[in-house]
Amino acid sequence: MKTKDEKGFPHISVMRDEVLDSYKDMQLKVFYDGTLGAGGHAEAILEAHPEIEIYIGCDQDKSALEIAKQRLSKYSDKMRFVHGNFSDLDKHLLDLRIEEVDGFFLT
Image (cartoon, rainbow, N blue to C red; front, side, top):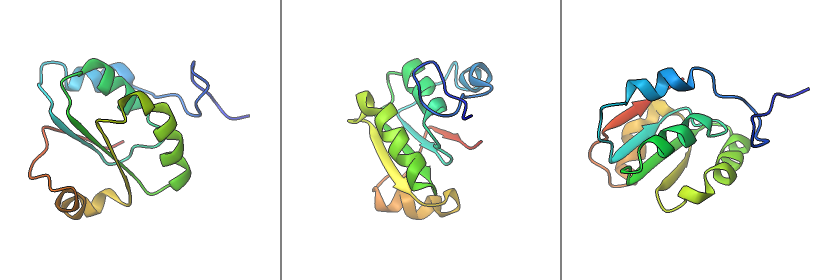
């Protein structure tokens, strides 16, 4: 049996509060998530930081990206989904014409 969160999405984000504490006193405009997965941490970060203008979610798993797109649909204007590996961060930012990020996350 697969684990689902309270909204019915697969995977429950662990250490959610600790992740949010890491960015508590920061102003984030551009954020890069190199391991987006099903989008649980992304959802929490976006809820806690409405000032985010661009949230780049990267994952190698196409199925996970599709789940994240559904989960994060209310943030679609801010989201940039990237199918790939975070090791190609420079290329992803170049492709998106982004010069710098204010926050970065890998799990």
